[in-house]
Each structure stands twice: as structure tokens, then as C-alpha cells.
Amino acid sequence: MPESEKAKRIKVGIQGLDEMLGNGLRPGSLCIVMGEPLCGKEILAKEFFYKGIERGEAGIYITTNNFAEDVLNEMEEYGWRLSDYGDEVLYKIIDTYTQTVNPNVEDTDTILYVPAATDLAGLSSKVVEAIAALSASFKTLRVVLDSLSTIITFITPSAAVRFLSFLKGRVRLIKGLFVSLLESELTEKSTMVQILQLADVIIEIRDHEITVRQRGKPPKTGEFKITEEGVKIT
Image (cartoon, rainbow, N blue to C red):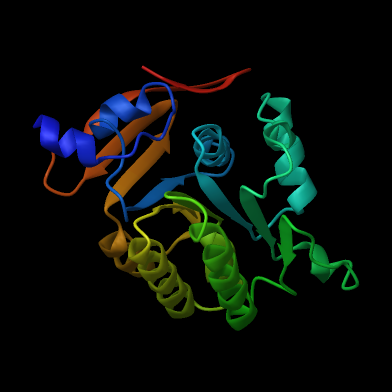
């Protein structure tokens, strides 16, 4: 890969993945991370998110099937403590799950609540709000959607694809990085085709193997492991 192209990419910070990507992701990229449940894609997404904070970037983590506190606690289990970065607001977690069981919970500086993953208008509004708040102060912004499959399940595949396209456009406008998780075994083929057509990068995790596909480049395959420190790719 030419040095000029490498210089334009943003390193994700995950051991082995940057090498497979060719020195990171291009600004504005949508990366779909797909695999069966509990294959490790959720850990990869959280590490991607944290590594951005570690590099001085901002982050937005959208959780559709877990409490925001659970997301933070799981990061801490791997030593990824967002509290280590002082009082400056470096991230926003958008939680579409908590208000389904506790409708009285209120927004904080770092956690924004949406009544449900089915409320795409409310979710879109919170995303726009978070992007505006963070992109004004930080050069690079990372966005994680965990996961698109929840929206597909509880609304319609076409609405999920439209939301993904909307979010991709918003992130591309500010030249950020966008990772969306997808349960490959639970997604119909026609919907999968529409989703993957939007992607710039596709990462598939299957049976301890990771495959990376990018536009205009041959696929690359490596070994995928979850360790006590996070993801390791060789």
C-alpha cells in the first residue's frame, strides 16, 4: 500500500487488526462486524471504542440490548476504565434499553436515554445531539452501534437499513469512524445484501477466525482470540 494512503488512515488500536486493514480505517468508513452471538464481536467493538478514547478521540456507543452501566462494567473487566480520563466529556453512551424497564431514568453528561430501540426518531435525535456536542471539540469521532440486529428484529429490515444509511452519512460528514455489529445467523439474505452494500469494510468472525474485506482489496484472514487484555489477532 502506498505510504500516502497509509497516512490518510486512522489506526483502530487493536493488536493485529490495523495490519490486516493496511494501517487502519479510512476517515468516514462504515465497518460492519458480523458473526454469530458471543463470537467476540462485542468485545472487539468495545475495544475499538476504548482505544479511540485512549488516543484522544471522542466516542459514541449506542447500546440496544444492554444497560449503559453494563457496557461500562464489561469494559472495566478488561482494564478499559473511561473514568481514568478526567472530568472532560470524551464520550456519550446512548442507551435504548434502560427506559424499557425504568422510564424515569434521566440523561447525564455521558449517558443519553431513548425509550426503546424501536423509537428511531428519538434515537436519531440523540445521535445528532451527541455528534454535535463531541465533534465541536474533537478532531476524530468513533461511533459504535451494538447492534443493528436489534433494530431489524423489533422494527423492520427496511427501517434498519435506512437508519444505518442515515448514521453512515452523519459519521462520514465529520470524517469519523463507524462500526456496526450484526448477527449474521439471524439476518435474512436479502437484508444482509442491502446492509453489506453500505459497508466500506466487512469483518467476519467465525470459529476463532477473522476475515477482513475492503473495497478494491483482496480479503485477509487471521486467527482471532479473546484474552484477559482484549482482542488478539495473528
